[in-house]
Amino acid sequence: MTEGVDEYDGNAGLELSVIVPARNEELSLPACLASLVSQSEPGFELGRRWELIVVDDHSTDLTRSIASAMAQEHPGVRVIEAPELSADAIRFTGKNNACWAAARQARGRWLLFTDADTVHEPGDLSRSIREAEVHHAVLLSYSPRQIVTGFWQRAVMPLVFSELASVYRMPEINDPKRSIAAANGQFLLVEREAYFAIGGHHAVAADVLEDVALARTIKQSKRIIRFRYAPDALSTRMYRTTRDMIEGWTKNLAVLFPRPIYLAAWRVLDVALYFGLPLLALGIPWLVSWQRWILILLWLRTLWRFYGRVARSNFPYTDVAISILGVPLFVFLLVRSTLHHKIRRSVVWKGRSYPTGS
Picture (cartoon, rainbow, N blue to C red):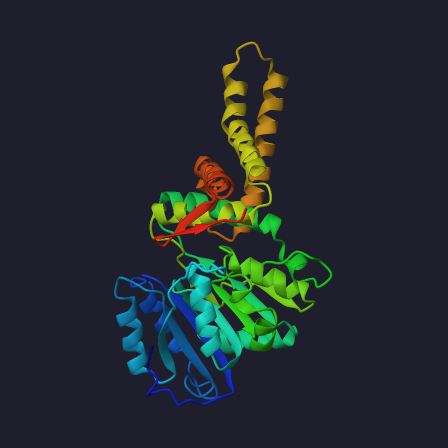
């Protein structure tokens, strides 16, 4: 079932299809869609050169109504309903199911999968196509500027993204000679031919980390991918509550990091040194002056290494400064994610439980 079809001109050979999967996104979707339809401009008109497909993934809030109103107002915007998730041999996650359904209806030469919690800067759609073509990339992914609120998001999110920057180094990702691959599903631009050649979201149907899986599959096919931090292109508010953040990173961390428990142990050591060295230097009465100075220098070295690493997260300095206080929760999330993937063998996201193959 689709809406907005009467207004859509049916023109084949579009340059771009923008696909927005949405499940219970009534708070985020209006700003996202407004930022997308405003990309229409002379020479890049919505409905003539590109289309916008919103996939309602069985939302129980006003998501469908918001998308339908946009479809009525703007020719070139369509709303489709994601197929029901089935328990057959191929088990889709909700997002993969929605993206695959939309991709098969899309008409664009390029497919852009972008999340409902993103806000796009003016002109970023047409610029992204040009960037992909200049770099001969069949997949271009942007890591957005992250918008965080509340103490725990501000303390934990820089830690996650700094560790991601250490594991997934963008120059290596963009090097065709290196096997490492990554992408961010919040902005995933893929050439149509390459997408269907590797099987699209159908090929990663059960993957909870579909963006990285797609990038890996495309790079293994000897095609070029490009990934970069792009605050000039879009921003996103991934989580609105601490509970959402805990659920989201529980789903992802054990898959993102090759040795999550090892990483957790190192971060516990960071906290122990951060708080323990000053206590030792000032609290042991029989230490002589030079011994205290050694402990203080070790403490300063610990601080330098910790904050030097977290500074790569691209978060504001204030968030980086308080991130040491988020380490216990980050460690908890690493352990919790590992338990869900390795022992419970399931994760929960947006009210659905998914089996893990770890």
